[in-house]
Image (cartoon, rainbow, N blue to C red; front, side):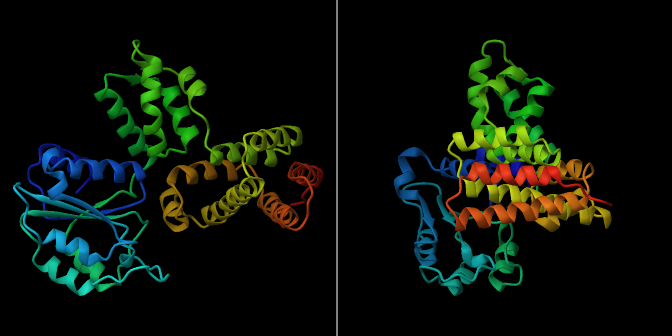
Length: 344
């Protein structure tokens, strides 16, 4: 079942199943679905017939007891269970003990008057576990990890259309770039952009550039391009702007290293014939970031990428072991990197 189909079913309240498993890390859809499931229960009944439990702090048995209870003066009961970490391969010790035997029994015979929903905000579950296999077999599963950049664009434009707005192609491109194609971030900007554009109802490029800040990752991506272009003045200026915006030097450096690591991995694997989709799956990186990395790595030599990565590793070590000014350390890194030449 797709997210669109589920949202339509929840809106009508018809043809709903008794068990759902919502998988994936798209926070926007996780929050929207939680609201939609709650709205299945009339407001005046929600105190009695709706419940939500965080399984990081509440035993599974508490949620199952609620799910097995008959609705109180109502048509149905809705129970949402958040963060079922026991479905993953994580080995950290849980704060609470979960009765998985009782869950197996419930999955075999779910309560007809209850809609039980597992919200699993993880990239993947541990398919080797018996309970995961049973849950996937018994429940209707919705996967939120499969949204491509194209899907994100289409969904966002559809939401605008519902509101009576349109968006210029250049404006949408800029919004996607500034938010790293993160639908949650894009939807967070939607109301602001619509309000700014009213009553013209067409969102133009100036609205996006004036109202939407770039993510730190996107700013760092611009910084990566300046580093690789050996534009010392431009790179140091942008680095200074990030520091003035109260970004932590170690965090900036960590994201820089991560970007260069991605460029190196992408360049090596692309030479081995990996497609964009396979790269995203293998590296567990958002497809949009892989798309940008593929475009960037083609313009630079692997040797330069490696030198930049190792240079940033040394900067990190100096930041942690000395009291030298981070901007000075970055400036020294850029001076050295831009002054070196690589023989291929």
